Image 1 (cartoon, rainbow, N blue to C red):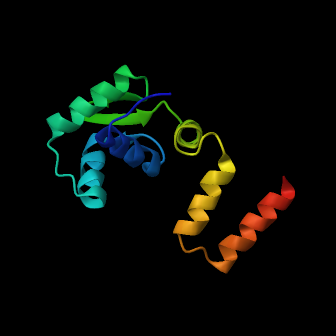
Image 2 (tube, rainbow, N blue to C red):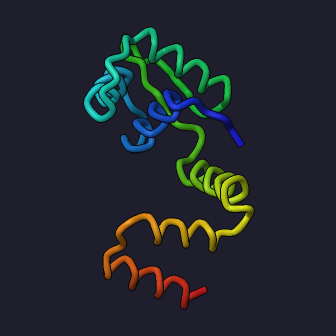
Length: 122
């Protein structure tokens, strides 16, 4: 499991949400608009270097433009993180996690129906 700081997670989320190679300028703009992070280019570059060292991101230049691309897939990260949460906080029980979510979040009838259909398919 790759450990990421909250700041690194925000960068990965922006890259994943963009859906492909994101220009560095767009990444900085998205961080400011979506997460109220007015980081300077050098700060973002520091986080990106750390993520490159963890083999989560790849960066390259075309002329004067820098681009960032995810190497770690969002689904792979979410799967790893979900397993980690279930193991650590819910003693390995996915049922405990689901029970917690249903107790602590308003679930619409539509969402309940989807969960029931999903469980019936298992």
